[in-house]
Image 1: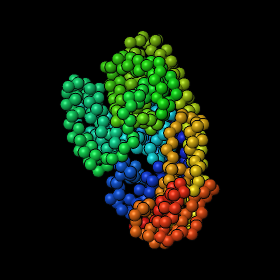
Image 2: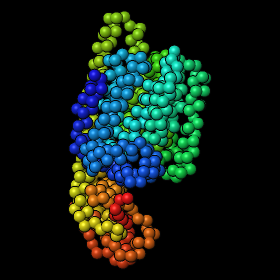
Image 3: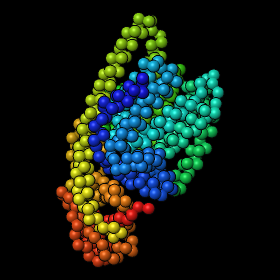
Image 4: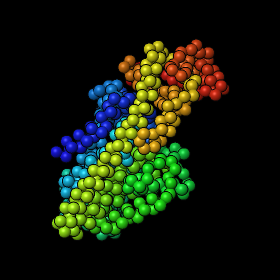
Length: 492
């Protein structure tokens, strides 16, 4: 019944995404997944330093079943989002909520703008996958009077494994273990910390491997202390005291009030498992990104689940001291408040969908232009792509958001700043059994003949290219244009 309710809510809110194209980074993740179908070792490969193979697995499976279907990839996202809502319901029941309260937590999460980005962004589904992994660990954890059965062990291991394959933030799993030991098993803090330390072994191995093979991606972190203001700012947004701003992090009295309200809720419900575990889910995902100088809504998806659990746990604790009549009145008040939060959240999500719809429309136009150019795309012959326009729809969308303010990262080397050009043509030429990749500037094939592909406002145009082809790259860059070489080959 609850699963059907959550599926209905997700479908009612997010159905427009089924008509959207893939956008931005989606194409590169799909490019990796398509290649992995033919070279299975790529199922464990990173993408530009991000090791999130569970996303690759889902993309590859979806492409196998529904090749070239953007709607299918978006549908998988919606199933995942509803699945997380169901997971929150089941964990809520484990944490002592009534069926009604647990269902409210699940529904509020799936309908919130703070959790919506993984529902409409294929590239951001790793947030839902990580949370599913952590919720599985929560469901596996035994109660105070329970023991570790083989089924619980396997569920915990599989959940932690899914989290590890989904996003780097999984390294905070030992902290979740401590919270589960304290909240569910009622262990003293020192025993809980000892249990958490056992879980640091795989984290240390993972972190060492990540540092050795995938490190070196600078530019994501800031040493400025001002970024710490995003913590009270995030909480103020969760309390609907101020709007979420992804870059400015205003430090205001509203943020201070939000911190005080949250701390008060923790104090009131400190004996409740829901508050202990909710606090972990609120805080732990934030720590690895604390000094990242921006706050997109993909960063708030998991913390908001913890916030809801924490507030619900504190509310249940407050209600336990009321008389039956007072409890009924409190239930009506809580239901009314939850309904208002849901209505406000869905209203903002609708605006977010309008914004993403505008971005999707721009991608659809670019795809149509690429399909025209792809009709004569040469096979096994280097092509120099030159971005000969300086247009992008992203600043206009960012300047006039209909939902929450959003961060867009234009790709300066690529058409309209939207999609990696190799991933774009890899997608368009997939039906011909071709793969497209970037050639480095020192590739010897660029010393021979090839083709020149200009992208101007309104479309691509093929032009004669000089020999050696590397001359075209140098000439374009000398004129201030972005240029790089592509190669289309049969996929193997």
